[in-house]
Length: 89
Image (cartoon, rainbow, N blue to C red; front, side, top):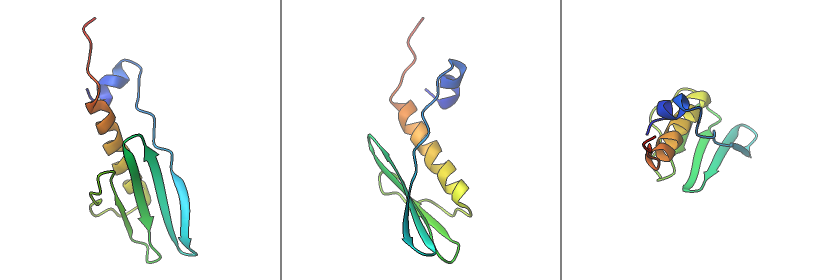
């Protein structure tokens, strides 16, 4: 099942809830916990971004925190949708 198939039925995967954990005055760490693990995003003092998916895979080159969050949300939705199947009406 895909997020689009869910949406066609009026259902969506709930978005991640991000918690801001400041590392220092100019660096931040954001985490989102799920039933299958946690996502972690970092914004460093030099303006670069990093992070890891639930399984420890690092995010690729991302230029903004919004892009990092969008990548995590897409991964989260894909994991949830992979556990669902359509039932015959």
